[in-house]
Length: 332
Image (cartoon, rainbow, N blue to C red; front, side):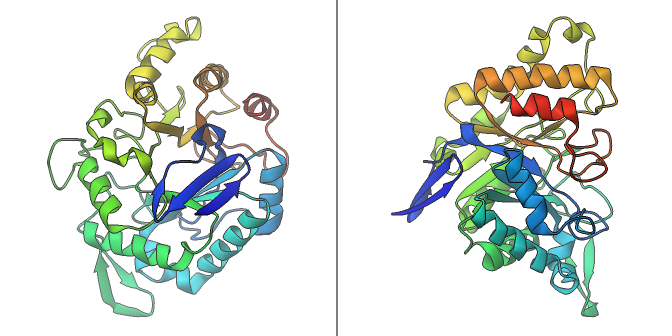
């Protein structure tokens, strides 16, 4: 038996992984940059990896989600620009604190989001511009295998987030081989060797109303990971929620909370709010109450200060937390 302990997280591997870790103990944060045109983690010009992760641990985070773009893997960019060296430093630091790490396929291409986890478009390899790779589903899985070959030996690798926020024509449990996210989840779980798979909802991450169709046999390795945002990002049907948070609770239970009741492992994969929006911060206080009542694990967006719409946990100096966000998260 191999046991890996990660600050409140314990999971057991008996050849085939089984879910013995406590998902309720996940207190995570996303640190982005690799998926953007920066092509590496943001903030390394301010502090090195070790200092960032030391501060994450200081603020109580025990899980780190790392977004990346598949273009960086299949084109050779990450191998050439030092991003893989950065990831090795992250995994090495994660073992010292300790902290679990989740690799998150956030985008196919650096410059844009894509509704599906595959594309008919191609990228050029940096070492041979005549060599192109189409980002088909098969090649996306090949890219995942390449990443796992490089980093799966680190015991701090908690799992992989298969694809960020399918939307547009993305569907679930429809049988459409091109658009059905369930079919991709099932194929990935058959072809990839990693402890845990994280899967977000369709319609930009929150909608898991059809996810009860997933095979129960996947419960030991599949973590359902909805993304939940307030009025700055997500359209709210009514204003009544401001004085009646039960409207929000009903929505959350309908979209993903029911899966927790059914016995699925649910860890919130993204949530956040803009400190410049009174409505957003009110929404965040209600959602934190919901997390506390449901005893759900969570991953906050984001460590970085300047995320579009919701900014982040830190202020612009990369060391001081936004006071109200810190107060709310520290209550969990």
